[in-house]
Length: 103
Image (cartoon, rainbow, N blue to C red; front, side):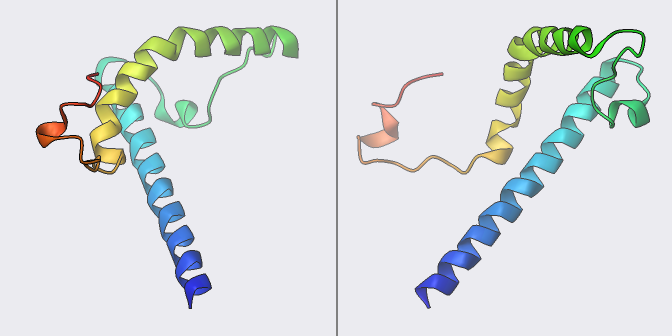
């Protein structure tokens, strides 16, 4: 019985995380489209490589793009956190969570 419950819990959690991932990716694409003109079909295939460059040059470009997206990506992720993360539970540290770190 316990094994069945654990398996169900694992499957349920995986499904919830997968759903959250898909929702967030769709929302991120909507954010991109809200201020820019992109072909969403092209964007949905991931990073676009330059066929005139060798793999190491494309890899360097990819890493540079990821680095450039770090700060704005973190900002965007924080906007989605309330919809993705479960509510924090009180650890009994006092009313209103005074002992929690402020973001």
